Length: 88
Image 1 (spheres, one colour):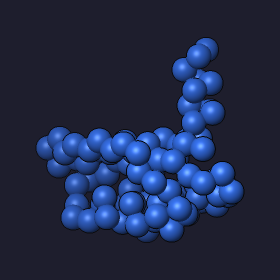
Image 2 (image 1 turned 45 degrees about the vertical axis):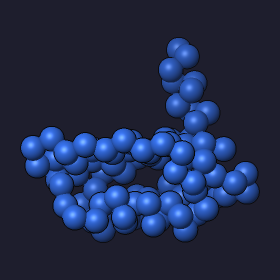
Image 3 (image 1 turned 90 degrees about the horizontal axis):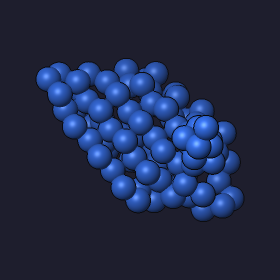
């Protein structure tokens, strides 16, 4: 299973480290990653691959908590939803 994760925030040290560490806790492999800093703002898109037995709902909840704790806006979308949205 794959997922797309986006992160936006004011730029700060350690954003990639914190987000990738949380992904690792859920057994996610980062397949592709793109990040940029525009002025004082940080934006990142990650494509993750999970083992089939991961509880994706728990992962989404954990990413939301991480975001709230660190002033990040994190959105995680299962690849099925992402693909369906773009077929319409």
